[in-house]
Length: 210
Image (tube, rainbow, N blue to C red):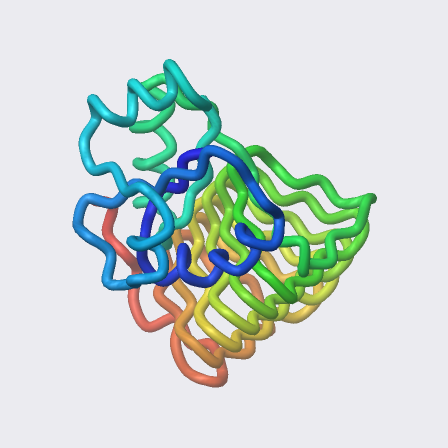
């Protein structure tokens, strides 16, 4: 399996990889990793020719170990075009209900809780200790930073980033491409492309399309 990224997220899942005894592990990084325990134990590739050959001759599966919704989407497209198969990763130390639906390419780290009747669509990232309550919907390429809490029946539009420690109250809808800064408590619906900040979750600006 190819792991896209050799930075902080890769470092977080490194103990899981060793515990799971996964075979044929290779990391991809545009630059050399600062984590010696990755560099000393696994091969790191950094060009398209090496990646395509790995997919052709060894293993087509790859997982996303990078943050930021737009970067994750770009990497998914890039490595699929090189011949890979986008694959989900769920830490053995996460608790995911068998009645939840986890989309292809999602990355769920340790100590995450995903409750029943939840839908997590393609490419989402759930960072450590985040909690997704019953009946929530996370659309494509959303990212939860550590310790985020989505209470029951919250819906996130595609490409949302939810900052560390944010709490979103029941049945709130967050529009696509929104960013919620760390520590917010979101009590009402948020329009698309909103930048939200502060404990009272105030919309401070509308984000422009890039």
